[in-house]
Length: 201
Image (cartoon, rainbow, N blue to C red):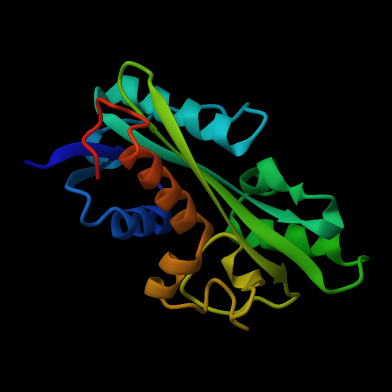
């Protein structure tokens, strides 16, 4: 029998990716809008894993359901690993964040090597949690390309592909992407019994 699992994001791009990545796990996937949950969880952790756990635990307690949440950042070597944990707060919306990133990079020589890093946390309503992590290597380009992504995706060329994250097909992105790696890492940990009370995927 399918078990309910809450996906703690309102970002439609993330929701689509997570739904695809969790297909076949036996979960009945819910989202925050379906559940009518509108709480805000501050991202005050020292790393992506701490932020993901904080969000998953808060939404699990609010909903009474096992909950999955992620925290993701873009780390650019020329910026000393920035914007990092502040990636989502660099500016107001996706377009403004991309513009601000390029503004900060303008005086640095190319190539602008970078990586996306992601942590995905699964939590129970009791506060037990497990985390998976993933990364995707690449570089930032000065002109956005592609229509299939969100956030910084149109500026990020995935290593070995010659394409930005926003130019990759949905299926390819869900094989090579940082979120895909984090989910697979989490599922592997669950299969090994990381959360004994959770139905093993």
